[in-house]
Length: 247
Image (cartoon, rainbow, N blue to C red):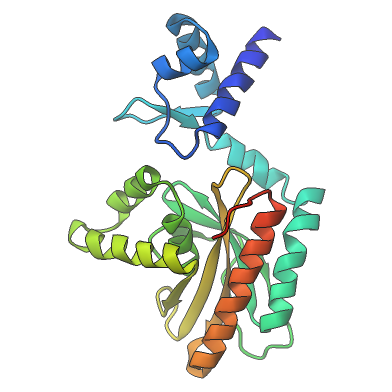
């Protein structure tokens, strides 16, 4: 029982400090009141189970991907059904377009939900479970823009050519200021997407909600309507997940 209590203490600490670029073993030891030797054994065990992960360069610790895996397995729980799905169904009905829910997974995102408007003769279609590099598409850029700088930097450095990184950072700054992202023909020719991030109780990027449309009939007025609808939806979902600051 003591080991479980200690492990959960580490998890809670990493969650509370998630906006930072991880914690060192010394910082974890001091915060948790454990000797470094005991903390090393605990972290080794937690790492084996995917609960935490260590950056090879900085040697600092963060939460492991197993928590996202467990979260996805809770996909159909009451929390998801009651808080998120009704909002994206509502967005589909408001826009009469395909609506997507994406979640970050390292240097990629995963499409975890798609709501189609069956009455729409022509619609954008991306397959559930598709993995998309984080530097591509409105949904991914909206998530990157709201991630901690250190975390976003690692992703951008690994995906974006060095000569393009400055312009990419400037784009992300604009996205964060306006609270949404737009992409045109980035993944599929002739399609556009509008997206906004979803933030949780801790201010972390939980995912992004996006609308995919065919570009040929996308007027400025229509685009403004889509932006307003997507932003309002992302804000409502974020509020339901406990986020309280304005985006």
